[in-house]
Image 1 (tube, one colour):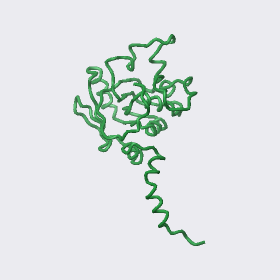
Image 2: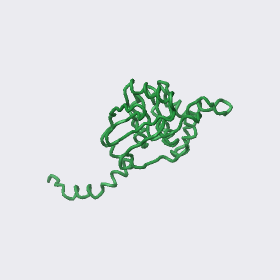
Image 3: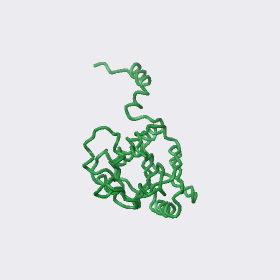
Image 4: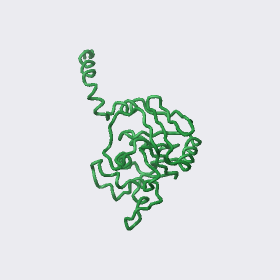
Length: 205
């Protein structure tokens, strides 16, 4: 995929999925430490899961999901405890730069979860049962699609119709829906802030 980080308004995403049914995928597996020298967010996608995608000679490992032509889409489905380990934001950069808009798991490491949100990737937490059924469905039919609705805060397996609600911080939800980062959201409210300050009464000392 190798795309620039997308800051499009997030409404509803319907997509096929790329499955990684392993638990405890840490940030060093997401983006190995030797690729952390760059300071720009672009270009990290090509080294996403580098040591799982390529062998030591640089040859593609065809059995790995990101190299398997059966799997595609902008939704990554991962096992429990995704993004554990170090707090490097580069892991979220790599996921976003590769082109994923959503990561589905039954549990995320807190810091990585926030890093994803800050980089316009939506972490969706589901039950273990939902996740297991989703992995089984993708294995049986790689064309299975999932629909993520951020307004309703629901994730739906379109093959079975099973739907679950997920939680998201209201402020981060607003950022995703408006396609704005923290600073851009604040600047978009500049006139409201100026009006508030102009009408605010300060105590006389």
